[in-house]
Amino acid sequence: MIYSLKGTIIHSEPGAVVIECAGVGYKCLTTMNTMSKLPGVGEKAMVYTHMLVREDAVELCGFADSRELNCFKLLTTISGVGAKVALAILSVLTPEQVALAVSSGDSKTLTKASGVGNKLAQRIILELKDKVKNIVPSGVIKIPSDAGNVNMALPTGNLEKAVGALAVLGYSPDEVAPYMTGIDPSLPVEKIIGETLKAIGKK
Image (cartoon, rainbow, N blue to C red; front, side, top):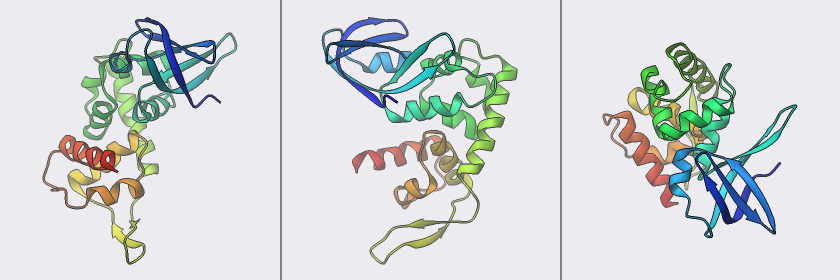
């Protein structure tokens, strides 16, 4: 499995980029969000990758960050959502926007993507919420501290929705909980997600 590619961009087109590594050019299918973050042809770049293996082809998908990769992988576990649809969704929505749409049950936002009708959008919301429930169990989580691991009840309200949304991005409750301490629980879910990701980024 190819985890990532780091090299020189030698070709770029809508929905795909070619990165040369040690003399070999790897074509990666990608999203418009990732394309907007990558430098131009001739510049160095790194992408996280996911390999698609089908009967008639083997392809790579490339993403600018691990959050987009994790969101892509979770989307493609949903019945009716293949790589093409997942890439289309992440071309018009950021991973954070997808997570927020799931946590708030906003299927209309997902229909902005090409190939996503209302029925499929509702299925994505329903199935992702079920998957997130398995990732975010009820009960307590352990928060590391100087005094050792401390048990803490899972957050409720908007904090709980934010934890579920962050699970769509690949973060477990145990990972995000320490960064949510001190965040005002009355803030909108989107703001809580942003503040948590900002705190994680500083570490």
